[in-house]
Picture 1 (spheres, rainbow, N blue to C red):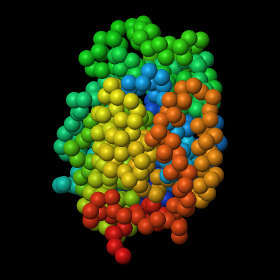
Picture 2: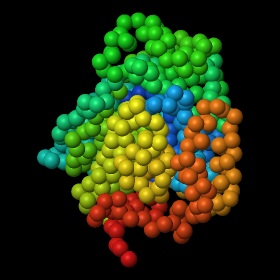
Picture 3: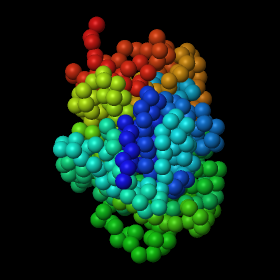
Length: 491
């Protein structure tokens, strides 16, 4: 059996795998991506964050394609959550880091979105082979030196590489090869039952594309508009209430919808899709976990292969693409001979654990249902150690930009005058939806709007970029193009 040789082999062609493969190939390295499915294929996780759309996807070169794909625009989120009986809404544009043209994300059909990223990887020089299942790694002592896979004809193949990246998701067959165990959270052990509906109600403009998250006695619902008529609807219940989704899934979902008046209202004139890729009612374990270690010599875990957190804030694709960006920087730095492997990959792991950790810690407090949204905003500021206002800290965490990395904000941010930004916020706040009124009457929100309106935005990349500081004492900083790590030399 002949053994091919590459610089990097990636297992998994989802957002994490496509991102890391593309960013490494863009530096001139030889990359092979192996995906067990044939795209397009179904996947859950349909709500994106601005950090992915305007940060990672712009670095990948697909931001304009996404903008033209017709995906519903997500300007923030709407929650019926906590002590307040009425729904409340937040806008990404409240944060100066996501102001103006970058104050939105998209709701995406993952089959289309993932295929865009995979095709982009091909166009950037990645060798992509679909229908190929990676089932083991090749080892030489402590180091991983390659991967073993089965090709579409059932033949066993082997490939050697400087690095093997596991981006094959929560059902990974490789993650244990890095060593250590997968530690599950006792707090977040949920089950999700979900399906798709045609003709469901929409939130009022300008937030009709928002995800609607609604808590009820036994859990919470997501309600994600994927087009003018198609909606992804899922019920997440606690492990102790798993009996509610056993047996007939149709009856189970209908019963859960009946327990939640707001979702019942939104689906009152809708019909469930029963054919095609959206016709199945699916169940998924949304158990939160993280691997004891994210890398070993020659091998790196990204996305759900490394960790997963409760999906209420739609952080899955963000964590996958952000970890892929971090891993790509580390690998690019090592392959270029700029840094040793341990230094580069310790930076990757520390930053990825930090991002996972702030979502996890905040989510623990978010499940306290006896408080109002101002308490959640304060908690977000606490866990992110953000210098911004409470509401901005909340929005920046939810938007995926709480790390402060310039690469996660717009690569082509145009400086916006404070008056223009204030006018945009005022227009947003003047929407007709009654559901927004409680939010915008909040003193803390008004204060944040006034402060954000006074911010004179600067271009965040190029000569006008703010000097970056290490995220951790003695850590590394990002190269100007965002593709590698650099040692930090204080002025």
